[in-house]
Image 1 (tube, rainbow, N blue to C red):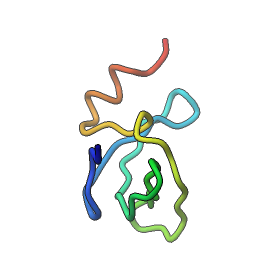
Image 2 (image 1 turned 45 degrees about the vertical axis):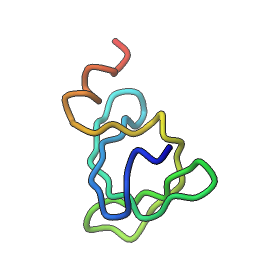
Image 3 (image 1 turned 180 degrees about the vertical axis):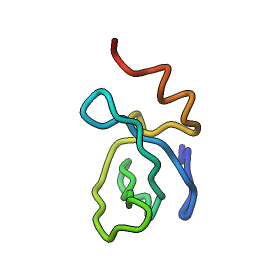
Image 4 (image 1 turned 90 degrees about the vertical axis):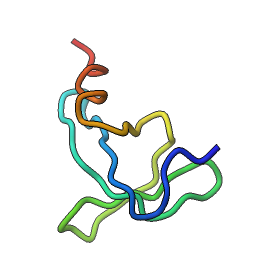
Length: 63
């Protein structure tokens, strides 16, 4: 089941401590191609790494 659509904003936890906003570019084969706002770089991640809100992502950071 697709959780995000193309163009949606999502949040991702990087390096287990940073919460960053990303944009969904494409969904294929169970993975999302994400891009950082104002940057051309992007990569594929699984749905479990993406969060709908910043608060949801912050609550899942390992302490």
